[in-house]
Amino acid sequence: MKETSKFSSSFGTIVVIGGSVVGLGNIWRFPYIAGENGGGAFIAVYILTTLFIAVPLILCELSLGRKTQSDVFTAFVKMKSHKAWRLVGGISIFSALFIMSFYSVVAGWSFEFMIKSLSGDFVLSSATNVKSQLDSFVNTGYMPVAWALVYIGVTGGIVMMGVKRGIERLSKIMMPIFFVIILGLAIHSMTLPGVSEGLDFLFNPDFSKIDGSVILTAVGQAFFSLSIGLGAMVTYGAYVNNKANLKKLTLTIVLTDTLVAILAGLIIFPAIFTHGIDSSSGPELIYVTLPTVFGQMPGGMFISGLFFFLVFLAAITSSISLLELNVAFLINRTKLSRKKAVVLTSAVSALLATLCSLSLMDDSIYTIAGVPVFDFLDYITATYMLPISSIGFVLFMGWVANKTLREEILNYNINAPWWYRSFNFSVKYVLPIVLLLILING
Ligand code: PHE
Image (cartoon, rainbow, N blue to C red; front, side, top):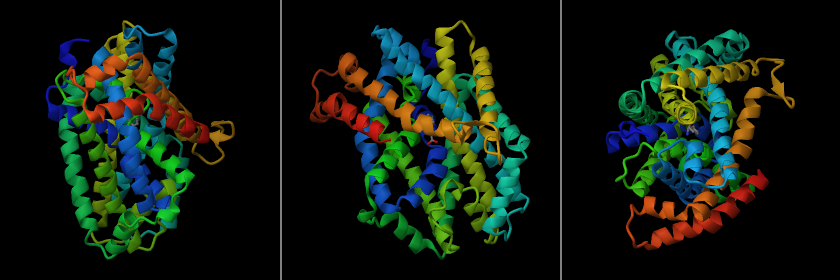
């Protein structure tokens, strides 16, 4: 890969990788999962999981990418390892395609909800009314499909412009705007009457709520939120400057991601406690509950519009990484140009997204094993594909490419400090076992 496809600065590196990890996982998934799993106690387990499981996995992926300068599949080819390892790359490529398809559907809804918010459709509406607005939108069939296609088109357009001119340049604009909006909305939430209840729910852990399933859910959430297990970090690792300190980069990314998840919680929980809405209302938390809550506030139309714009910004930088992962793979493995690779990947994503979206209609025929295609893809990626490929990554870096891991993380320093020795021990022995147990329980 040519040197021109490296990120141009450390700020650029952080906004692009930060853009991949910060997404619907933080704003849509984290608040409802935390809400369903006991709030503070779940968050405590989640933070431990990110430190002990996610950080080492990200380091493994980034090292493999930077060493081989290639996408997640070609990386295994370049390491001259046994052909069977390529399977790990293959699973990653398919996971990215599957995630991209249902992700685009949920992200596409943000356009519709931005428009509805600003046109006052949610003003003084009850939750039942907002829910029926969401249902009738989804049941038109063509509307959500159209928005998902627009969304994939925008993502494809950015990826087509290339790593520096497209992905990095736009992330440098979008991520700062994202932070200004999320901070503004969080500060606004601090003025609501439900703030003390909201803060209590988020930060006062009730450890009796922790059980096996809470731990499993926390691990799954960490994988999704930190873009782990599908080689997004391998692909982006190839674009990271050779002198950059991967450990520092990883810690910055993980901290940012956790901070954004907590900020999203700070926006959402004070608002829902203010209006006495159930904190465990599931995936509909942001698309049903929030418009209802904002609809009761003075000036809520604009706050709600701004919130769905935030959702869009968060999602797009993540989908860029999902698409880029496949595009880099096609560029490296076939003779396709970037343009053609983007068109092909977007077309396949568009087809899958259409199926996902239509599968959510009442009595839809688009089901697999009795469940809507949308839920099926969500379930098999999170429960099987991401953990399996993660086991592949740690085994590979721990046992086959251990020297590479060491060189990349220590930047070719000869002495391994204490933290490296415990990290390496964990990659070789602890993580494969822990991940296997998670997979079996999942
Ligand atoms: N991390 C993204 C989010 O939180 C989702 C994602 C997963 C993006 C895997 C890329 C790869 O929404």
